[in-house]
Amino acid sequence: MVWFARPLVDAQEAFGALMKSIPKLRRAAVGALVFLILCIQNEQAFAQTSPTSEVFRNNLQKWIERDLHFFTDSRGTARLFLRRDTVRFALVPGSIPMKEEITGVIAELSKAAGVAYEETSTDVNLVIVVDSPINVGDKLNPALWKRAGLPEEMYSIVEEKGSWASGCAVYSFSDTNTGQVGLSIIVADSKLDAPKMRDCLIDGVLKAFGPRADRKSILISEDGYYYQFVTLVRALRRCEQSIGVDRLITLKESEQKPKYAECAADLLSR
Image (cartoon, rainbow, N blue to C red; front, side):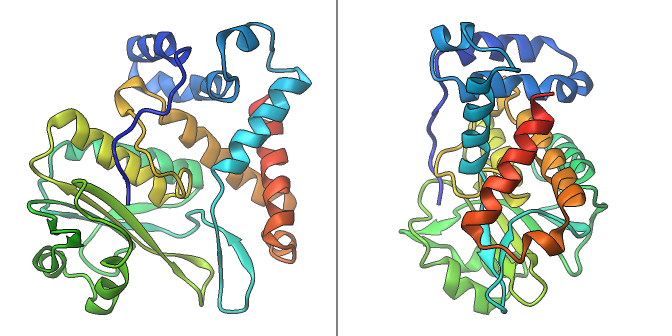
């Protein structure tokens, strides 16, 4: 489950204002710059560090490692949680708030991951639900689950995964047979105010593509920081192409993680 928090350092505030002043289509081009702020923990360190320095690169690599999530397939192989198949998403209802923006985020992340995407009602692997109430006490509202047309056997799994009373939640299933992401579910209470709902939905989509999947807090989307994760997804895809997925999955998770992080840090610090 997730809750609302703001784990951003003070140095990011000024950058947030800058990002809001940049046209949306150009933000992705500068997304990698945000890593400078997220990887350096205070303004003094930031001032003393350049993108080519060893300190910067080490901090960047550690930051990337923290946002990599792995699961184990049916053969016991560790696999990075990253979208590699066509994203088939459903919106419940079809006219969810901020539909155009959320669909745009899905499009950006799909392009970064090198996969196609489509809105559909069949064979979905990403479901976004905006309704109320989403919970009954600490449990997920079973009526909402049925309205979304989700498998009942999955309900018994997700209802036990912590409290659903925050008004925002995301959960992903791995397909252990294929080694791919099976299904991601993002749920937002329609009674959330607009800023919190936007944060919930955008952060949920990010987590459904892999980055931040293990994070408990929700990213504040209005500052434009989520573009850094679009950049990260693109870098991870390029790393799999250059290193080779078949080679990576022969390694343990503890061995894969630094290889992904080192490769992505190298791409992002150029």
